[in-house]
Image 1 (spheres, rainbow, N blue to C red):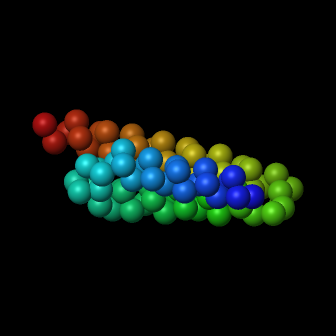
Image 2: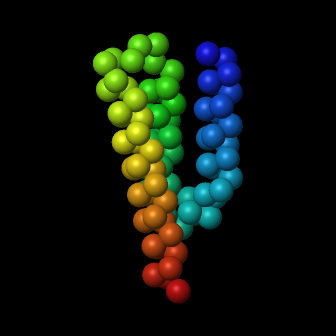
Image 3: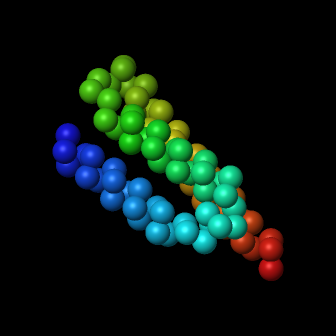
Length: 80
């Protein structure tokens, strides 16, 4: 469990570092991404599988994070 928490913290640090620019330019998208990452960390720390629904929810969060990333990239391209 301690290793999982360490990985979760590292993921948040990397995300914060990589998207510092996005946070300044697209604060709502950056906040949404941060919340999604936190949600996935909570899902991963759950002690039960919940009939596979926990894993499916984590996959959906991953897809949502990718969509937010795409939105940020789209926003960067459309500004120029």
